[in-house]
Every structure is written in structure tokens, then in C-alpha cells.
Image (cartoon, rainbow over all chains, first blue to last red):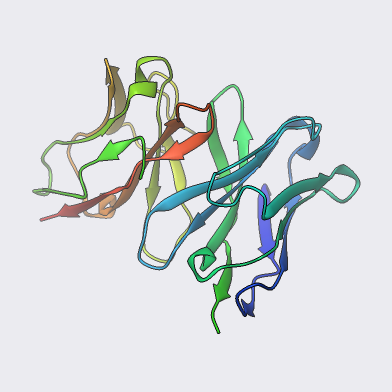
Length: 119
Length: 107
């Protein structure tokens, strides 16, 4: 079964750090770029960051650039998001998503992990 | 602010046809992909490319594009189509961007 499972979400104070993980199974992880997308409570989807299949290309939304770092580990079939200097506006459900180039779309999504930033 | 613009809410009578639109300059060069999200669930890809559906997506959903506007059309709308719908493409920097989403209500 093709599956993405996120973990690492938590309740943290502003300025603190958090590392999210996304475990992939059921497909060839190395063949796909991977992305993080977030959704603040009651709001729409916001693209956060993406990483190419071989980690050579990484991109970030302006809202997280310089604070978040995306990475992947092929040996563990896992995607990560290191989140530093967290702000209350980073509070959201964070989804990882597989990007398939032939579709130019995100065709597999995890169920998300919740990050709450509050004092 | 999003570089892809969607109407916040659209309603349709059961069995009728509805069109959900997405506007943005990048759509002149790139196709949009469309995602359906029901409450408490992850988004699901429903349309990609010119007009392609992943396996399991009913053929009453279709996509089209003209100029700077991409459209998702649902023909013979069913109650289970009630959801939020998001378009996705690229922004002026080449990064991915989502539209603000359209809440579809089936009457």
C-alpha cells in the first residue's frame, strides 16, 4: 500500500525548534520529489517547501525561507522538515506530499501532523 | 496573498453542473492541478494536466483551461462532491502555489 505517514508535530513556544518526519512506503521514494504543505486551522492550503529526488534542488516559500530546512534520507525512505525560530503563524497541520513529474501534481498525501506555536 | 484566485464559495443543486475556476498569470504557461478536501481529511488529487483523472476519480469531474483561467467542472453533481477544492500551479518565481480554495455546497 502506498503510504505517507507524518510525525513530530507538537505544542511549542515561539522561538523554539521542531523537526517533522514523513515516512514513505509502498512506492519508489527515490523516484519522486517530495513537498511539505501546511494548513492553518480553518484556512486553505499553503505550499511550504519542496526537495528534488536527489536533494539537488530545494525550494521554500518566502514565509519560511531562512527558518525551515527540508531534507530527505533515501536509506530510511523519509522526508524531514527542520523548523527553527517558530512563530505563532506557523501553527498548522503539516502534510507531506509526493510530487509526480509526469502529472506535475501532488498525487499522494499523508494525513498530516499538527504543529501549534503558542506561549 | 495567493497568485491563484478562486471564488471562496460556490453552490449547486443536486444533479446539476458546476464550474469552479482558478485565475492566475502562470496558468497561461502551466496546467493547474485540482485537489478535493473533505472535512478532517487530507487533500486528494482529482485532476492533473490538460484533463486527466487519477484512478478512482469519477468521470463526472473534468478539467479545462483557457488563457489565464483553469476550470474544474462537475457534471451531475452528487452529495459526496461537497468539499473544498484547491487549484495548484506555479507562481512567478517558479515555486508551487495553491489557490485560496472554493467551498462547494450541494443543495
